[in-house]
Length: 488
Length: 138
Image (cartoon, rainbow over all chains, first blue to last red; front, side, top):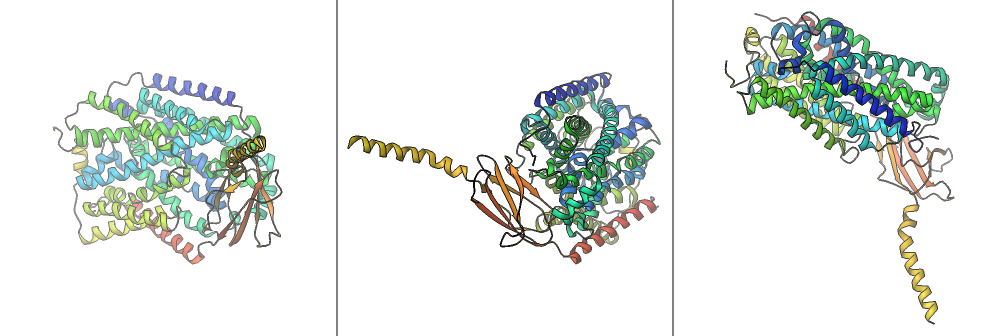
């Protein structure tokens, strides 16, 4: 039986690939971002991204460490429902399509999701939102850095910390050089690599192992994975859907793109990006079900994807997996670094620390914050397996589920309900996160987002019904670039 | 008399030096879980070399089978139905099992599972209606 003690990719090839692609991404980052002069260029790519690049960046950013590494993990842990449930994350992108159009209409000069919450609901709700948003962003960053280290460790046996450090450093450097323009440009190339690579791996897996062998061995050794009445998997289905919706609706990764895409591009780009994304988790997750048929030992659940692919496909497969996952990781890690540094710059540095900050000092602050985020991420990802929450990719990711799902309703109500109660929006996030977290620890990781979203909905509806607060939509367009305390 | 005394002292010293290695050489589970509600868990162990890991569903180990043999120090078990599962661990080249672990799998009830499913369905439907019908009023 094979496992981690027999890595399939020689470390010399792994280092060669790592260095070659690192140079490619950093060079592209420098080339694409060489004309950035202002914070707006750096953060929003001139607000005129076209349809092809917009669709590619929506899809590639959503194909993350989570998709390529966590989808197989969930297939291994929750079976067929885990795999299909994961693909429901596509609904997050699809449902964000109408929101993107509305965001662009309401805030033509907006910068961040924090801007919207501040103007729509006031300072208290804005601060609660920033806490929720930053916890999620940080959890996602750490999970992707972990995925990078796990991937390199699983395929080539290179030390986890070394691989994680290299991937994180590369992404920090090219995000630093190119800003959102570099992120979107590299996303386009990474999308092509991801789609072609995933299709190739799935085709080879089915061709080499076959459905019959996979089914027989699962029935013998892990029968619950094929059961349609697998309780934890049934609980997981809507949890994952709402988690995906929460991630996209609140995160500045997607808001910054809604602001950056050209007029009338956002709706179509998010819709098409979601449809293109839908089959990716099924393709990526399916290969994990071949584990019993192949007799592979999986030392840690989040390693299953690369281990199976490398085992089935041999050296060529290991190289393809390496390139695909590196592309997927880079396309998300850079997006998140860029969007989170924007949020910290606009909403914390300019919003709370230096309201009078000039364009140039914001531009500089954005870069310093990218580096600081990279360092913090590295520190947390170094503790993989040592701390309870940073145990595996899925555990860490779904820990943030309670926070993000509780932000769904403040965003939806804020965009569409004219009488939404601002205090209710804050408390829907606080109570939704609290009860969602309690369910994470008391029941399991597969219900945290679901419970968070349900509690948040109840608080938002009740508060708005009991104490409606009318809002003038035009305020968003009038005030959208003026943080609290800044000059008019 | 002098030489046997030195020999005994040397033997004692050697025994003391080798004791930790001998203890380390016998593979042992590292805090195995006692219960699982989703049919899955990770078993990890401390071992100096290759190990054999056996899984059985019955107390007499009648249906036992080796689920892993090699140098890894953990394995992910998943997809198990309700039941009590027994695991035994030994060094690959040893005849005797050096450690055992028992994990009870007790899945959530279907009533609870469908309760969460319905709750999720309701939240999702409200979300769809809110977006489709969502127009600024006033």
